[in-house]
Length: 238
Ligand SMILES: C[S@@+](CC[C@H](N)C(=O)[O-])C[C@H]1O[C@@H](n2cnc3c(N)ncnc32)[C@H](O)[C@@H]1O
Ligand SMILES: O=c1cc(-c2ccc(O)cc2)oc2c(O)c(O)ccc12
Image 1 (cartoon, rainbow, N blue to C red):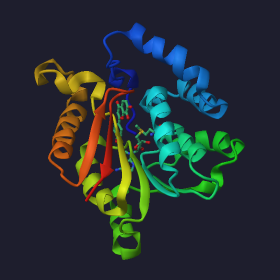
Image 2: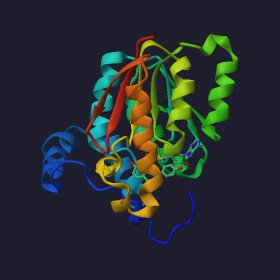
Image 3: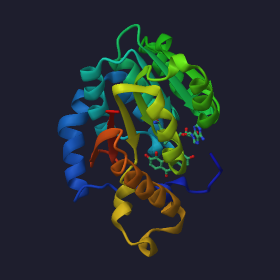
Image 4: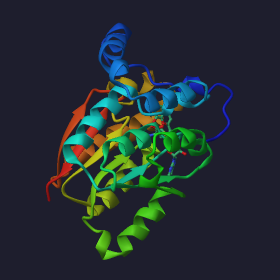
């Protein structure tokens, strides 16, 4: 992550109609049910200058529910940071479930690792420090990996979402889920470009392009949900 004096200029605004409504959802429904380990990791994120880029806890709650419904054995995560979404995945898949977790930088993962260890789920995680695209291409070199994953969560560089999708759609089995974070980009996807602060334009344009791609992709059925920062939930159907 490049060094920026005040990373919080990147912080996305909430996407619901008011901050009070977001607060209501978090305080009455999300925090009371959030597992202790996730709470601990969220608190560690609050002390990290880039902590706001972690998956939001209301999005995490919806993902936990999807994971419980799907009961996936083989999952993949692109974009780990300190591991909030990774830990919630590990907590919600079966004891013998596995997660291939890819991030270009291991430093932040090392902050979350003690919490993941304490929660007793480290054995489910295979962390790979690398840019994600070459790892996905390598997985695709082995035909046994095609259609072998049950679940994927994508939360890395937004400009590559379309490229990740082209690879992950081949790795996911029919009926499996691909969940993409930040697809409403703080609501800025609906703003005229000139009103979007320049430093957040590339993320906004990438989210618009990605959502358009998914809408036109007959290999998936999907829902673009206004939970967290926008979760695009896709199910592979062909
Ligand atoms: C928004 S954070 C992930 C947050 C995480 N899901 C969580 O809940 O804490 C995005 C992560 O993507 C990683 N990243 C950025 N570009 C990447 C790339 N090309 N390949 C793999 N990881 C990348 C960054 O290092 C960063 O840790
Ligand atoms: O403001 C951000 C920035 C990112 C981001 C930037 C560059 C990368 O290579 C990866 C991620 O991600 C964010 C994010 O996931 C989020 O939930 C809020 C804000 C940002």
